[in-house]
Image 1 (cartoon, rainbow, N blue to C red):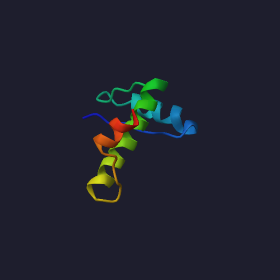
Image 2 (tube, helix red, strand yellow):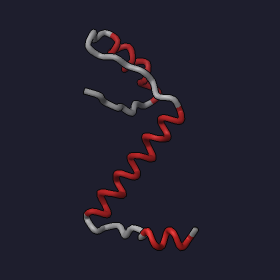
Image 3 (cartoon, one colour):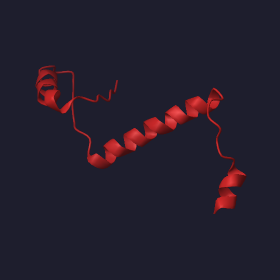
Length: 68
């Protein structure tokens, strides 16, 4: 199982130390570009969910092509 955690910077060292005591847990920090990618991906998923519920109107492909 893979988890992604967002931790307050003040508690970062504490959590890293705690997790290091579990033999079955592997940790690795994300690089800045990867953090930005994950945040943008989360925004996209949220927008998709809203669009499926009809709470967000999406741009049509024709409108997108007309902008270009």
